[in-house]
Structure formats: structure tokens, C-alpha cells
Image (tube, rainbow, N blue to C red; front, side):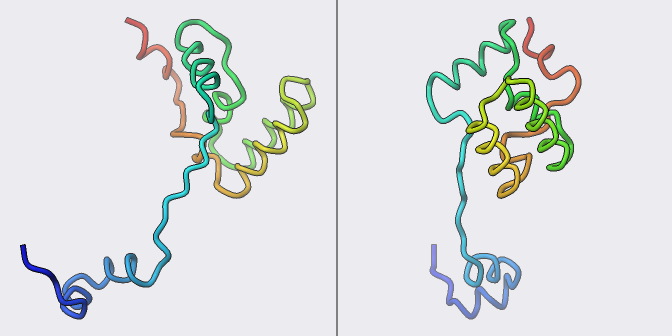
Length: 113
């Protein structure tokens, strides 16, 4: 395979060139389930366990809806102030979809055999 001249690449693929060369290219990974314990707790939901804050957040359509949900969970004592602050920060900085794709109605039933 031959190498492309940068100007030839820019001419042939102008949009791709702008994305790669001119923009800062990085993928930020800020996972909510940052430990093995959290990952196991998330799997418990699939086996009849109770859903956690992230499970509820993933059902939200907008960042505003997710923030209101976190406020509600905090007011009921279902999450600590520290966890609520961390969740709100992630929603504000990276958006509700940073927790994963939206969980639609019937999400869990597709895992039941």
C-alpha cells in the first residue's frame, strides 16, 4: 500500500482531513461503572436485581430530565450527595448518553430466555 501525500489526501477527502488534522482527535472514556463491583451490580439487574441510578438515567431523553431524576433520587436518599454531584457533573459535561444508549421499553425482556 502506498502512502498518501498530505495535500493529495486533503484534496481527495476534505471533510476527513478537517476531522483528523484540524480537530483535536480524542475519545474520552468516563465510565460510570468504574469497578468490577459496579459492573456486577449492573448485571444483577438482568437477573432480577434492583435498577440503580444509571439504569434510570439511561431511560431519560434529555440532560434536563436526567438532572431532575438525579435531584429526585438524592431527595429520597437513594444516592448520596457526592454520588448525585458526580452524576450531575457527568450529565452536564458529557450528556445523558455518556451513561450508555437509551434503554427503551422492553430492554430487559430481551435478555430473558
